Image 1 (cartoon, rainbow, N blue to C red):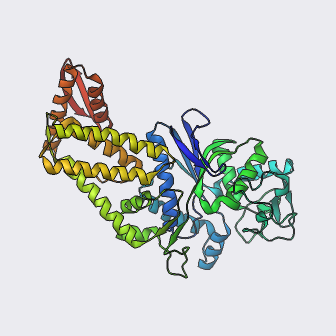
Image 2 (cartoon, one colour):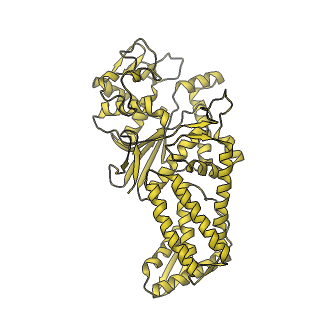
Image 3 (tube, helix red, strand yellow):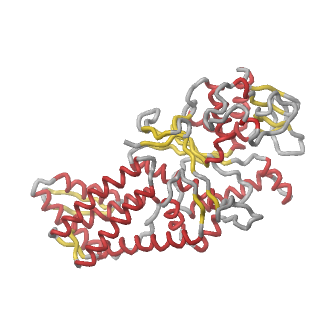
Length: 469
């Protein structure tokens, strides 16, 4: 049973999607005005692993992430450089995608640019005005937080606390806590025409409009960094639930812990501002992923270069174990020591996946993986051959784990002759299993080979293989 911590309820809950095994997952993406830093890496790697694991467990995940390409920071940076804000946003969006590729983050189904949802944003603001949750002033359109009684329920803030955190100062607002849905601007700035005049959307309304457009009034998982809880995610809830009348807008709110560098929040002035592209030039991106996996996604992390170096050494030890396992000669007989390893492996699977089911407890799961690696190394130290079916099981499990964690994904080149020899042994072992009536194990071999593109065709008790085209 998969369980996930819900920021809204502050407890770990059984995961039950709204629609069967279909999961609607949304994560707040970057504001593209600068290069992505290691804090972004921590957050997006965490949700990449969550999406990978959900899919491995059989869920059909639609993972949506926004790209904030309309924002005051983008406009200021574009002004400094003397370029069009959208042009600047596209440049840094491209850099962001390069960073995601470098980190092995490929689980997102759709990246949605805010600038391409202006019509949907305008329609949503109209609904909020019509329902009495928003009002227009000479500076823009604002959400009336006094009308939404649940405002603050995600961050668990008291009414007086809502007034002192990142509030937009504007004397035309009814309440200091009210936030902008539409900002009126002069024609010499980037913007769009609307019923309330020329301008551009507020930050919070962009995400809500994108989610409602693609997923409707309710979604399963909404993720982001913990610092987005208030006011951004709080505002998203208010906008969505006020407009649709549906509660809850999100079933499971997930947040990653804060990342610091040397005990300090990242800052260019402190000299501890670390870019993703600078790290991956010098260090294996998989080592960075492993370093983050050593900590729970909700835990704060203080980044240290020594931790990354240690993770790189740990990663190399795993690769060495996998290489030894691949190269060991396959045997047709199961020794007593191998029976112990087989029992250990079955216990490993039970523990490993139970930890991941417990709110993605990657630190404990990774610890189990290293224990398995140590056990495999010990038996490979003591003998030169390994039972073919056991070897196949272990390599298949490592392949599965690599798909979940995004590590151990660099594949060695296998000589055709060696591949054929291993296949012949596997086919021979599978044939003996079929003769003994152990069809479940025989079918597992066939199915796992199919997953890597090798098709077995049975003609009576004779088997031939071919590569899937």
